[in-house]
Image 1 (cartoon, rainbow, N blue to C red):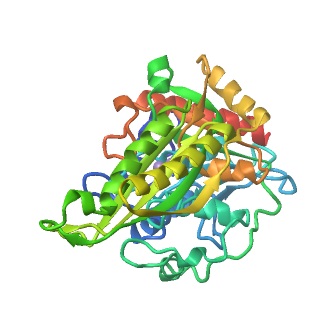
Image 2 (cartoon, protein in one colour):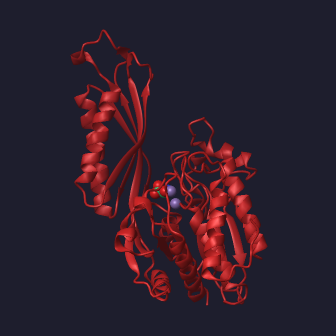
Image 3 (spheres, helix red, strand yellow):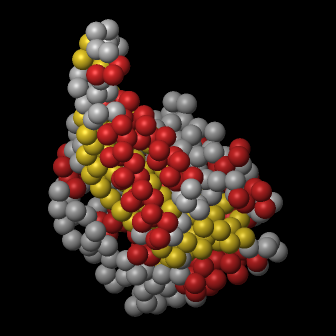
Length: 412
Ligand code: HGY
Ligand code: MN
Ligand code: MN
């Protein structure tokens, strides 16, 4: 959809929503399917690159395949102001997760206009933010700040395709081995749908993020004894799925006992997967999160102990493999204050809130780039990572204006 010169807040909101709807149709089934480093993400990058070019931004694809559109400021010697998010999605994802931050960022940059502020404004679409395809995400932002593990290219998806292979198949060459966010941007502002119920409960269309939760991801393998479903007495079984089931419930209980902590097992495989065979092996991935470091430590420690206890109770063994861990990180007070002023400038009471979801902003902040997040109210009970994810045109219109004024102040 070509760029109409949208001027009124409503016209801008309409254009943002039209673009999000166009992106939503890429890989559309119940929701949108744009797995990171996949064909759908690439189509989204190509579409947004065309919108950036139409808006007069210079377009670059960096060594990690991140898309960066730049609106020149009047003083190119100054560190840039960055905004953006990601364009990949979980399976059957919603219209707004990630894409809102990129499309609203482009809208706000275009509203600011070239040369009207001193600092160049860059709109960034980070590659492979979602961890669901390869078991680890925030790839583009981590690559940019030099935080890619040496063996990360070997991570496989469910079809046995590696990160390195998917990266090469998109024509992106070889995985980058060192960071390049140098000179570092002056700051980064990520706009994102809240993905929770807090803003709707507060009757607020916009929120300002205070901090982003810490999280740890584990592969857990339970090993028992495969056997005939009909001939092995219950007292003699080592049922690996039985151990895994105990672990899942124990992990939920541990998380429920730690303030703000959550534990999710979204993928569990019982092998050999035959209906009349006792599973000798069960493989699962545990996603553990907590708002603070002490909570995360307690959650990881107690969930790890729960795996051993669950295995022993089912006469099995457990192997717990840490795949990644990101510490909780605070948003930069000065950058967040600019976002808060922009929200207040619309006559709204800025609502401060933490983020339970992970974001590229966490990687940027941890790398020392002053970062902030503007949250947009989620409707439908805050549902996300699902086709029902939604917000209202009112919140989009206010988000566009708030982001524009925050960028004007930060890039002045
Ligand atoms: O998992 C997350 O929090 C984000 O959606 N990648
Ligand atoms: Mn997500
Ligand atoms: Mn996201």
